[in-house]
Length: 256
Ligand code: NI
Image 1 (cartoon, protein in one colour):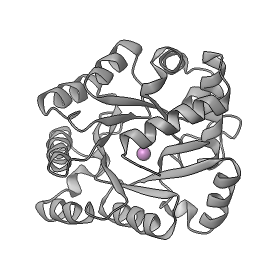
Image 2 (cartoon, helix red, strand yellow):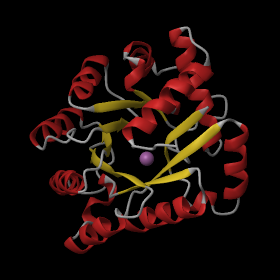
Image 3 (cartoon, rainbow, N blue to C red):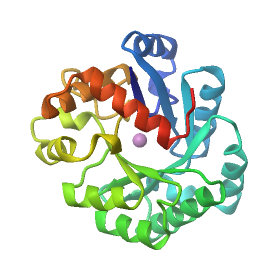
Image 4 (cartoon, protein in one colour):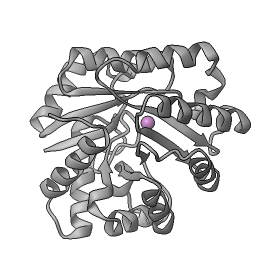
């Protein structure tokens, strides 16, 4: 069994065939899908999908790309939405200094505000960190962001930084790029970090793993991520799937 710990199945790219996608996930033994919001509307949609489908859970929050859309009103709406029973975490939040779609100081302010929001709700957080490792680490430490645990989603840093984040209460999530030829750094992370701190994800519709690269990504492909980690660690894909599923349930307090 597998859990896709980070998917954007509310994306418009899935609107015509979501039922088929969920069926393929089931056939591939992907028993749960964590649907992650990136702005208010996609968060609201994530909650709707969680209500509609038993295997779907929701994470709600504002992506650093959309940090400039964060207002007091949005914060209040997120706070209310977080009370829905299948909202398991707040995110994805963080810093993206690669695309810089919101000003960096705004990204940092909104990251801190959402950490505080999650703490008020006693919920774990989902962090997006692209080309901003040191700044994310600094904010995580200052805000004690790992108090209710969290995950570094689509982790792209090196091993020592991963260890630092694990010490601060974070799991490390491995996504499709691990299957790419040039992914030596991430492969080293996947080979070396403790299995009880690891999650797997697709981040679909983006970051499609091999051998499907070039196509739209979907939750059933999370098995390819598990397969690659298994190769690196001398384990089967099923063993990786089983361990990472337990970790995902523990992090997100999913009891069934
Ligand atoms: Ni994402």
